[in-house]
Amino acid sequence: MHDPSPRSRPRRSRLRLGVLLTILGVAATACSREDASAPPDADPVASEPTAAEIGPVQATINTGSGSFRIELRPDAAPVACANFINLVQRGFYDGLEFYRHSRVIRQVGNPWNDEETRWNCGYQFMPEFSPDLRFDRGGMVALTRIVDDPTSPVRPNEFFVTTKPQSERYTFTYPIFAVVVEGQEVVNAMPKGDRIESIELTGDPAPLLAPYADAIEVWNQALDRAADPRRTTP
Image 1: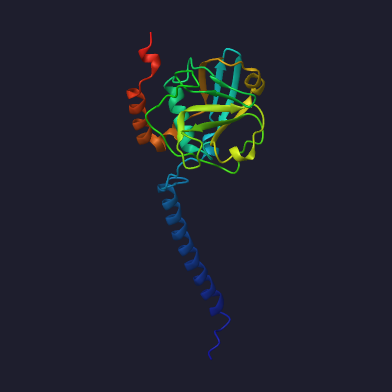
Image 2: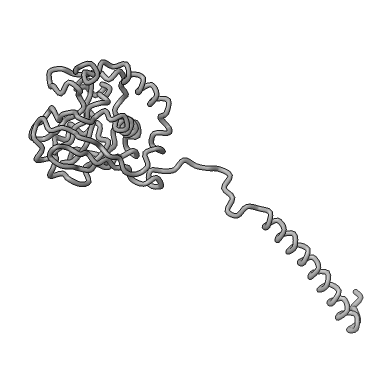
């Protein structure tokens, strides 16, 4: 094998080094041009925001006895939460009585304000249950059912708030969609017949409503057709 002379080695080394530097320079220029033209942190796929990203949606329920605040749980009951928000935005609950009153619940949402006469809002949906929401304390906010049967739809317009823990059998009978986070003492001391004066939403409910836009349109049409005694009674 031919061994290059000592004189030729440095020359060839310098030549190789020059070629390498030229290649690196061209590559660096190409990279800098590519980076300049590309948008920073481009994200071609936009994902739906999660409940954590949206932040909590709460409702302050103002009554004649005072106010209490509930936090919705769309992670556990998204349809029930969208339904409640829609009814609040329509002002449906304003002026209604907590007509059903016992040692353990305060119930509202019947325009007749009467335990003997039930009101049909014109639509219904099936209950949503979560093992994270149980009747193990007071302050649980749940929908009622058409009948007390595990296969029965909910009565979308009526909800109740608990004052104390209830039997475990209620956990997967009545679907919980919110919890009291402030003012539980107002709930506990509320007399029968106390009324909701207004409900104020805080947080951004729009992302919770968006997936159910078609259903909400159907719900609102049914509510507009329903024979609400407040519209027919002077």
